[in-house]
Amino acid sequence: MMRTIKIGNRLVGAGHPCLIIAEAGSNHNGSLEQAQRLIDIAVDAGADVVKFQLFRASKLYPTTAGECDYLEWKKSIYDIIREMELPIDWLRPLADHSMKRNIMFLVSPFDEESVDQVDPYVEFFKIASYELTHIPLVKHIAKKGKPVLISTGAASMDDVHATVRAFTETGNDQLMLMQCTASYPAPVDSLNLKTIPTLISEFQIPVGLSDHSRDPILAPIAAVALGANLIEKHYTFSNQLPGPDHKFAIEPHELRKLVDAVRTTERALGTGAKEILPAEDELYRFARRCIFTVKPVAAGETFSPENVAVLRKGKHEAGLSPEAWEWVLGRVARKDIPAETPLTRTLVG
Image (tube, rainbow, N blue to C red; front, side, top):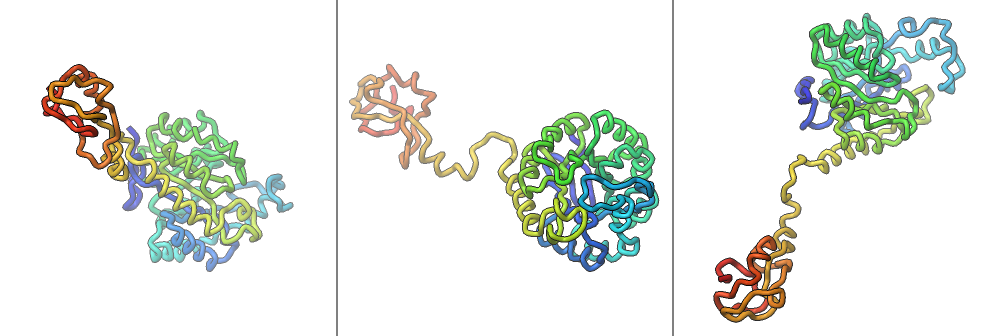
C-alpha cells in the first residue's frame, strides 16, 4: 500500500488531492520584487506550493565547464549560473511573503551549505534531477528529518534504487519521487508518463510529474489520470523575458489553466467504485428497463413474447427487471391487465 506523506497540513498520496507546485525557479531575474510577484501569480492561479532554487555556481560547475549547447546564450555555463543565483538574504522575505499569501514555500538546495540555509524556511525539500546521484547531498537532506521530493530526470531505475536506498538508510522514510524528462522544453513523446505507475508499484510511495513540456495541461492531466500525486511546472511572467528558463515556462494564465485542469481531472476520476451516481439518477429512474405488457392480457392468459416485452419505463412505476424474463414466460396473468402495464410479481401467477 502506498505510503502517505504529511507536509504541513497537507497529505500527499493515494486518495488525496494532487499537490501542485508552481516552479518559479530562477525566473526572478535578480529582482526580489519580481520574485515576490511570482509568488502572487502562483497564489492567484491556485497552486499549493511556490518553489525557488538556491544554488551557487562554484558548487555546481568548475569554471572551465564551457558552454551548454542547449542554451541560446553563448557564454560559459558557470557565468550563466552565477547570474541566476538567488541571494541568501531573500529567503526570509520570500518565506514571509509566501506565509502572508497562504502558500507553502519551497526551495531546492543544490549543495549542503544551501540545505542548511534553506532548512528554517521550508516544510519539505526538493532535490533536482541532476542531484539524484549526489548521494552525500541526498543523505545530508534526508537527515533533516523532513519530507523530501526527488526528481528522476536523466536517471535509470538502478540510479533511483540506489538513491532511495541511500535515503532510507538515514532512517527517514518520508520520500516522494517525480517522473521527469531532463530536456528544456521536453518533447511530448519523451515524457514517458507510464513511468509514474511503474515507480508507484516499485516503491509504494507518492510519485508525481515534474513537467518540462510546453503545453500547460496535456501532460499534467494525463499524469493525474495515471495516478500522479504531485505536479510541478515552471512558470514565468512572459516567455519573452531574457534568461534560460523563460522560454519553456508557462505564463500566468496557463498556470491557472493547469490548476483548473488538474482539479477537474481529479473530479472526473471519481472514487473507482462502480455505482449509480447522483448525476445518473434521473435517467436511471426514467430509462431503466422493465417488463411491460404490450397488449391487453386476460386473466389466465399465458405470458409470451407476443404480449410482453422489455421496455424503458419512463414515468411508470418500476416493474419486474429483465432478469425475470424467463421466469415470466409461460406463466399466466392473475387478472386482466391493460396494455403498457409494468408487470409485478402480484400480476403473475
